[in-house]
Image 1 (cartoon, rainbow, N blue to C red):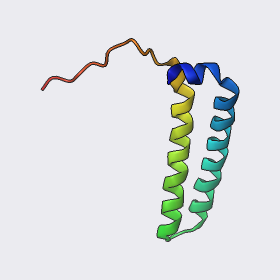
Image 2: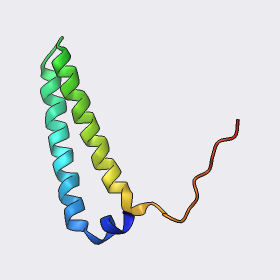
Image 3: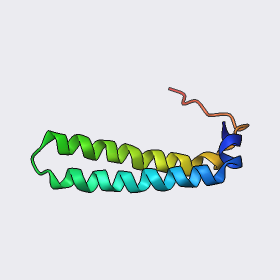
Length: 73
């Protein structure tokens, strides 16, 4: 899956830009709905879109061969 994002940079950049812009718009729109649960939900979805944009940005830089370390108790 990492190879896909390295090969399709135009698609990745378009998705990052779209997620970023829509996420910011949703956060500001939800922020204007003071004292409303709907506003909070809209802001939460906007935050999720911003995190998805960050995840897409970082995806090609992950090393697929590096083992993940497990925490010992």
